[in-house]
Length: 386
Image (cartoon, rainbow, N blue to C red):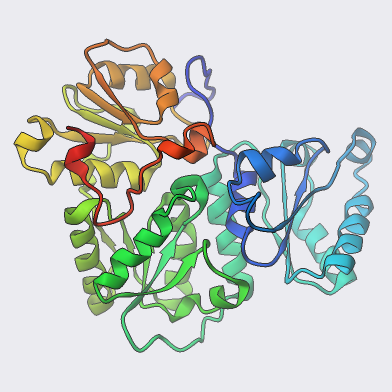
C-alpha cells in the first residue's frame, strides 16, 4: 500500500477512539476522550446506537490550544478526578484523538496520576484517531482484560465460549448478538461472555472461565491472542452466517476445546494480498471476519444457487482503509458486489449486480433499519444473492 491515500468516492470507517467507547460502553466505567470540546456527539451519538436507550458515562476533555501548547496535563487530571468523585464509576478509560497524539500526550503516565489521586482504576488506551475502530476495540478489550479479568477463575463445567470483538459497530442493535448467542446455545455450547455487549463489569471478570474464544470480528483477535498467551485458551475465527457456516463453526469449537489448537472456519484461500481478487465472481466488501465468512458461506452453496460464481472478500486496512484504485478495479471485474450501500458511488458497469448489506461502522445510522440479522444459522445465504 502507498504511504498516502486519497478518498474520492469512498467514506472512512469509524475511528479507533469510537471503538474504545463502544467496547467499554456497558461495563460500568467512565470513558474520557482527550480531545477538543464540541466533538463528543461524534462518539456518543453518530457512532453509538445504544446512546438513547442505555446510559453510559462518556466525556470529552475539552482540550484547548493553550493547554495543548503548554502540555498542562493537570487540567485533565483535575477534571477527571472531580467527575469521578461525583459519579463513582467502576473504572475510568482514557483514550484520545489526533491532537494528543501530535503533542505526544503520555496516556500511561497521566492514567497513573489520575488513579493515584482518585483511587479508581484507570485504563489507558493510547488511540490516535487515525486508525479504524478495529484497532480501538481490540486495544480497549485487551487493556481491560489485563487489568480486571480473573485468569485463575474456574472453568465452566460444560463446554463454553466467549464471543470476542462484539460491538454495535459490526453487529448493530437489531438482534444479531442475541441470535448469535442462540446459535451456540442450540448446539449445546454455553456462551460464557460476549465481549462486550449484553455484559456487565462482574460478568466480564469471568472471561477466563470459557474453554474457547470465538473471534467473530477482527477486533476480537488482539484480546483473544492475549488470553491464549496468558490463559491457554484456544481461539476459533469465524461467524455463524447461515446453516452451513454455523455448522462448521460449531464443529471447530468442539475440536479446539478437545485438542487446544486454534482454528479458522472460513477458507483461507479467499484472502488476497493488495486487494487483487479474481474477476467474474461475487465480491464481498466489509469487516474482515464478516466478509470472509460470508464469502465462504456463499461458496458452500450449490453452484446453481450461486449462479456458478465464486465469492471473494476484501476488507479495509486498519490504518489506511481501502485503496480506491484497487477497489474500483475489483468492483469492475466482478459480476456481483455485496457491500454497504455507500459503496455504490464507486463507478461501475450497470450490469454488475449490487446487493446492499449496510455496515454500522461505515454508513452509521443511515441504513440501520436495512441491516439484516445475519449472525445466525437461520440466515438464508441463497436468498441474499438470488
